[in-house]
Length: 312
Image (cartoon, rainbow, N blue to C red; front, side):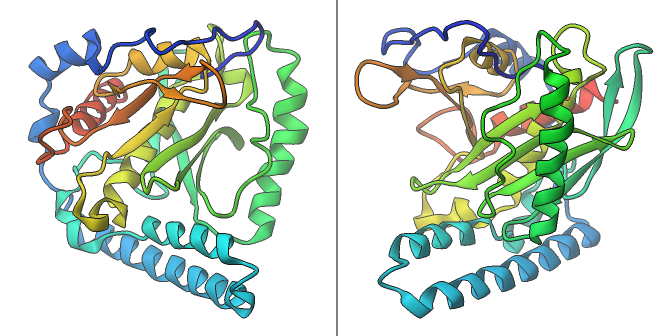
């Protein structure tokens, strides 16, 4: 799946290029027909246990980081603030019953499509929590450098995101594996606005373009990122109705078009990037698709229902 492309000069968006707020046609029609909103809660003891164990492990890692940085608090003031944001990735066990049954959970096995045969095959999404063992980061970085970047030249439609091989330990990574190879990589993080953002989403070069080896890699990783949004603690911060997940378009029209085709994604106001008149559109999985009422997780559930239909 091709997520972004920079073979040509990116189009410069301006503030009037996009509607103020809009659900695009695929989402509008899907809202009328989807059964996604009727999925029950994911009240499974195994899921709760998994989230509990993850929370304990992540809390332990964060506490160790606080302890190390706290030795020189004045010098590490900014790092300590960023570390405080990582705490918002802790699972919220009080809301397990609100997680849809079809949410993609930690270390899940999903289905992707083998293009040559049209068959669905199993793929494993392996979660890499913040502050994991450095060897795990090095393994993925090595694969991107030695396999993805070298193969990129052989696939004219492919593009590997700049700097994706430099894994940030403050992010939660999701790596999709199939056939013994790394097929795709995504990461999420809590930013200074205290919202969960999808930072990277990239398929291996052989999975991009019309002749992709496997289809559904990027969408599967996006589904897992939405799952993290349901699981995490950040949405109860100061009681605000935070969105499930925010997505950046980074000025590339093909990224914008990709997000616009996915049911459930809500396009918000364009945001300015840098100095001057450059704007990029932002996309969200909001709780019910509006800015005023946020009592349900409608748009994210619509996406999960649509995704489930594609892979079953």
